[in-house]
Image (cartoon, rainbow, N blue to C red; front, side):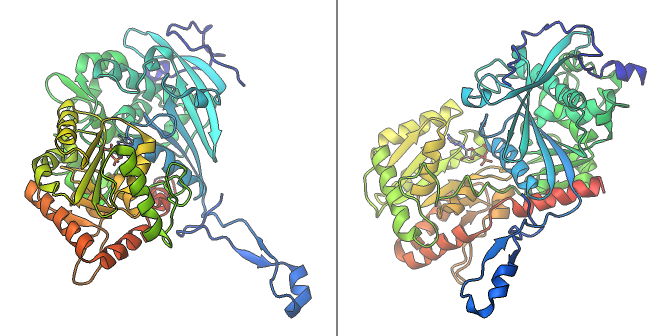
Length: 554
Ligand code: ADP
């Protein structure tokens, strides 16, 4: 135990004068309540004054009183590598923003711990307030690192940014594993040490993906006997493909974890490599992933990314909880980035204004009669882009336009640029990351394509439905759990789906969508309304996370 304690970061008061070995950032000394149900139960009471006037009053004066919060209150520290609007590269960033916000409305006290990347826009950096600093042991050779804490409180959530310029001074959050492995070994330990330093010990530490997966491991191996040891840990898998695998000697050096943990049950992956996610799965009190279907899929060899056996072994503590979206952020009625705002009442007349604006902006033929298909995605082989490439010539039939937004694998960037050249006016390839354009496509397209090979949850289909854009998806992971296939006999469903990963089946699903769009617009429009009406908010899933936290800390 003495050995373990040695590794715990001490406050500056306990520590020798802190030498800033890492080029520490000059620490700038700049210096609701909701019910367990879906909607906040805002009770209203008729005031006494109003009652006294009695029947004579036509409109009683109504005073809202605070909605009732579910009890008990629980405190949660979220630890992850990205969070909208500070830094976002994909769905993890959305979840790290929206879930804490939703949890605060369900009586949770939430702190989000993030790296203070240099690429966080100045606008946010300026709002951060210096919270403290200390030196922390990290490496096997005893090398210590500076840990600064910068804080920003916003919308009921406390954001604490771990500051160290040596690790976080790049223009992007992720670079390559050579840099990212040390960066996230440091981050995971610094986050725990920061909780002790701030004397804020949560009931639950909720870690996200491989970048925070060492948190439960450090907690149990090195923070025993310190306040933070009492917290229960939840590790959420947002995408099992990324695991933080690197050669064992390097991971040993950067973590200084005991040799005993470099075992096949914990960190060891194969003869040469350690696997950070695998270790986190072993040590977390509970594992979650972002949909029920994906929770089952990852226990099979096809989706298991070589961890299926490990996950089967730990499946007694594995749950699937589907993601939601922030319905205030994604709201066609108030979205400032749209050409025309709309809601379920006027969608059929107003949405087309966004379609026109999109066609004009992107140099597509401006024609309301065309069927516009959007694709907003990282361009990787996860996303089913090979299927789209295979059918593009059949897709562009004179009545259809395709708008792609994404960056990633150069071969997909090149193929979409090629299609743009070949089908001028019908295909537009936006090879970029652009929030504004994404909003324009969600609102302006008729349908959104998500034909993924695998999809842990997927957010784009949820956003599309919220904007009255019909999803066309493959039945895998969260896509299967969130898009009910259209049934032409009962006139139910939210989108068009296909099962096996085959180009012909994707084409068939798109053709079924086109048939309804061109031949039975009334039924298409009913589906648009059903989609806008579907509950894709976080309310339900946040309640499930809350229940999980309470089951761990009754
Ligand atoms: P993943 O996390 O695998 O990338 P998700 O569907 O879970 O996929 O989340 C993708 C998120 O990133 C969505 O909010 C989507 O709008 C956004 N997004 C993806 N690509 C782009 C892009 N090129 N420009 C703007 N937003 C994008």
